[in-house]
Image 1 (tube, one colour):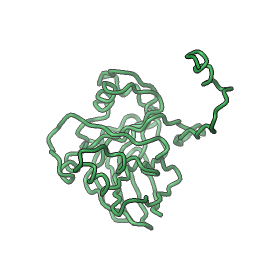
Image 2: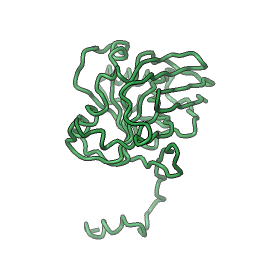
Image 3: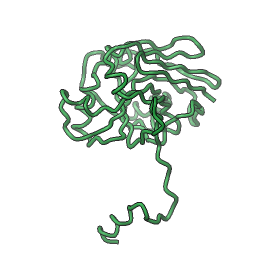
Length: 240
């Protein structure tokens, strides 16, 4: 197949040898239309206290990133406890949804690319992540498994602005486990976007999970999780 025919085969009338997969999409507050998701980026150890509890250095270091898959999203509030793990942890995070993208985006204009914000959970098979760390291997088995990215509705920036401060909490069965403030982010949202865009070409539909405050811990079947970010929204998840 030539390049020309391959391009043509991607058009809206193309036939495919297998069914097209569904497009992962997140609800938008106050809107019937959905936000289609292209990629999910995650920032590691972006709160000093969490860096310490994970054995890292609280001093500011260059940000590092890992990815989840768009079809890892959970939008119905149900988190099935995953296979191959006996130690699954919650990590509540501010999620940034990009409406536009680009390469080498300056910090000063980074927020112009943000469509909105949401509350998300970076669910982690901590035992498998720990094994990968010890072996110097990638983290996908611990981070990018099915249903590992619960996400609440996106609040458009046109409605809530760009939150640089505000409480972020995660309660399990009514007991607060994680508590912090967005102003404690080691790397702020504009800096995250600038760093990411120097490594990847960002595009509309990208989500960025910006890191979690301290207090991460295990969940068990039957747990009720409530993530809340002041001025952004909340996310309720049941572990089944």
